[in-house]
Amino acid sequence: SRLDSQRRADRAEFEKRIQQWIVHDKNRKEEVEEYERRISSLLEIVHQMDSENEGSFRGKANREAEEEMRKDLTHYIELLRKPSVKRAVNDSFDLLNADPASADDLVRYYQDHPELKEFTLKAELPRMHYEVLLTDRKLVDKDEIREYLKDNLGDETEVLIRAANQSILADPVAIMTCDGAGKLVHDGMFHSTAIAKSCSFRLDLRRPGENRVKVICELAICVPSGDDETKEEKSPNATLELASANLLIEFSPSPTSTPSGPLVKYQLLDINITICEYNEGNDARALSTAAAALARDRGNFAKQAKSSEKRQGVRDRFLSKVKQSGIW
Image (cartoon, rainbow, N blue to C red; front, side, top):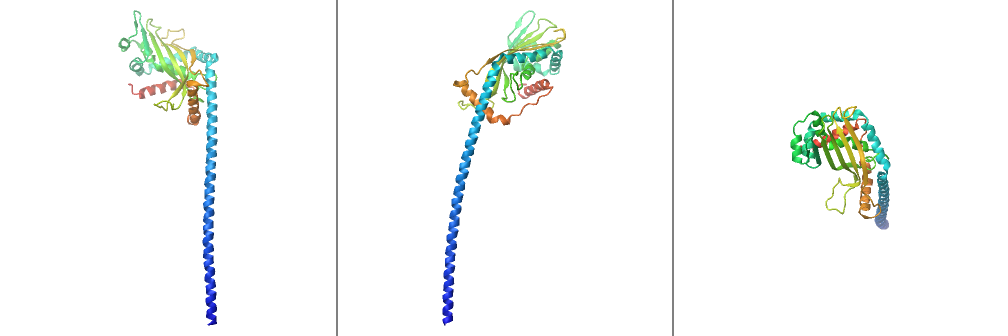
């Protein structure tokens, strides 16, 4: 009996200790869970702080990149103001003008592309200014010009008609385009382009053997500007005009045009700055928008490959775009 009583007492003590251990284990588990909740909360706060710091850093970096690009754009505009740019471009033109192979190459190109006559008469004639000088009269009416030029007027005149469109801008625009102090269009850093705003074509057919086309074209020197939030209609291809340039081109396929054969002559007449105010007003806001777009997309543009056959490639790319434009 005493033994049973002792065993019951021992059992009761063991059960009491077991219950204490269970309670202790439960308390420890709750403590551990509480610690885990606190640690998780602290980690969230740390992550949030890191995110805010990173966002602040990125925002600062973006602002610095935009400001740097804005300064570069301003410098580019000031560069276009300098007479040395016009001189450098015309020096490059003079080298091309003095090379008889340049005119011969242009004649061959238009001989090989008879479809450009249709482009002149159907696409360019309705939207550009044209004059045709004949021995007894001058044609300015578009219907009269189309009616006169639609028939075959001889090989040399056919070449002139094929050349009397924007394809003749390909060579001089390619020469003006590059990165450097002596170039008008900087296609690398600023991804600027030259866009024809207006063109005037005069076909002088008064003197056989000296027939020629004279072109005066106003080019807009533009950079990508991104979407303008102040406008209702937004365009991903929006551009900002920094300056305009007037270009003169004369071309004659006749082998007697000059002592050395056919004639081609390019001349940059002038450069007029469009952006006049850098610090306030619409010009300053447009410049800031363009700088932001260029800074944001700087890494997304690829430089166009340069080669010794660049001029021929420019003409071919132009013709390809014409065929894909749906105007044929």
